[in-house]
Length: 110
Image (cartoon, rainbow, N blue to C red):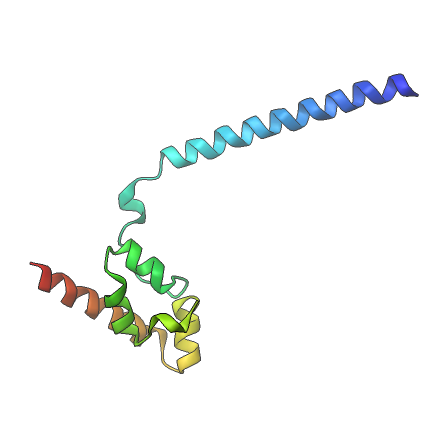
């Protein structure tokens, strides 16, 4: 029985290593094909967090905080849809406030 276990273990190890290499290659190929324009300035959506919006749209944290009327003591707020739900306001109003604040910030930079 001992002679049967060893080849099975080596075969299992070989398959696990082959799968690891395969998925590493597939993952790296996916990273190479991500272009900055695919990530930057994605339309603001409910799944985004305030931090993600600020990063994606290249806007300072203070602009986002002012638009959403939040402060740093609020901790982790979650996605915009949760913030809107907690406040009882439509998500569209929250998104419109963010977009207006971003536009005002960019107009002030020029």
